[in-house]
Image 1 (cartoon, rainbow, N blue to C red):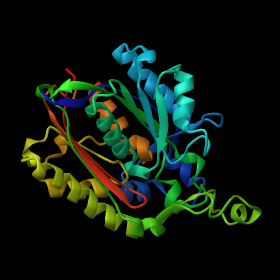
Image 2 (image 1 turned 120 degrees about the horizontal axis):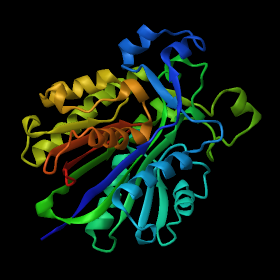
Image 3 (image 1 turned 60 degrees about the vertical axis):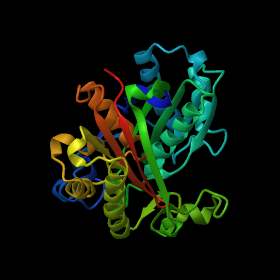
Length: 331
């Protein structure tokens, strides 16, 4: 039988601090009703000052390790999807590897913004299907509060901090696993969602600091237009390519960026809301963490059973977008 990559454990971590819409009313010119009606967000989690992305990622990975009873010395690879690494180098994956004590694993970071987890999941799937790797931890983690300007009401209401992780292991195709994966990119969208400074093009200077170039910038209307189309397209396409339709789905887990974007995808798939996992109201957009965080909560809430058909879909800066189709393999 063909070797498939199956998710054999899933976990997440969110910081303790809660930042509500009412808290934001005191910081910028906005209000709870405006934020709820346009985004679906009520509150989001924010890291403590001394917490970094690696701290979030490690806690999510530890929950996976505990759930599976995994010996950390058997981990082959750790992939961390993030756009808020602790440092440019070493990679956050290296830091996570050391903190976990997984000294036999190779590790690296992957940057694809809000599509990062799906990109990393695809790479983990390839490692497992190659037959050369048996245990791969894939993590989506971002400390978005570190690059959000809390004077910009257009972006500060959207983002939160979190991490989610899965363990991938080889399973027989009869037991399900990841059936298909589709990834896309369009670099012409780079101008609509980015952080201008901090890299080699605009290294940190007094000018970049004064101009607030180290914060995330988003052209909300352009991003919304592309996201609505692409996320709905790719979710429908991966089902059609594999001979399924929305009625076959047990659960659709979309990137949690904006409730209106999720609504558009749901209408396109012609599914009911009891087939959709939504937690944006409590966490906001946690970038690479949204899908594994939602998956972990769905599993904890016993919304998934072995054999259930599940679709992930995401859209992010770059532009990047993609989807994954799987048969749930955990009881």
